[in-house]
Image 1: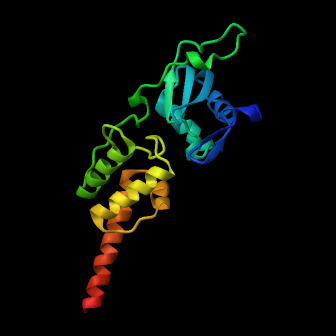
Image 2 (image 1 turned 90 degrees about the vertical axis):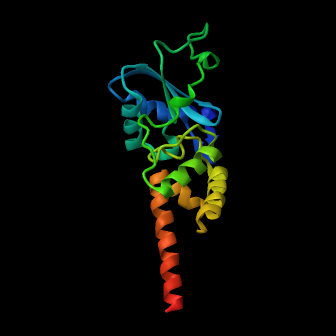
Length: 195
């Protein structure tokens, strides 16, 4: 396995990442002929030549890589741009479309808690809309944004979350479950005190 050269290491969201390692995993997919992984606006973007869908590649990468190493966007190309020396021309790679960053299938909020949290995430992450199954990291989330989300969630629900809770939950759906558990626990504690 080619793991890339050390001088290509990048740092995203506090993690040291070797794009060559991600490329090796994606290249192992039978429907990928060529792949290049680059950092674009603090996000990992995979450029691919092949017939694999973004959802298939995201699932394939998730089986071998930690969440923070799974590209947030997948861009299909007819061919990777090369310079005069026959090497990848990173500057010639197109910027990914904004909607390539969100999950493939939008799942609308189903509860009031999910609705409020989705609105908070959309504002903090500066995206038009957030589905309840969209991945926090895929939307550009990082530790700084998780702090903002915990502060806004405390304002909205009066519960104490840690940034780790946001990073671990990864989706509005999971975070909504946690918020509802905390609200319920506080109500039960209040009833016990009054009894």
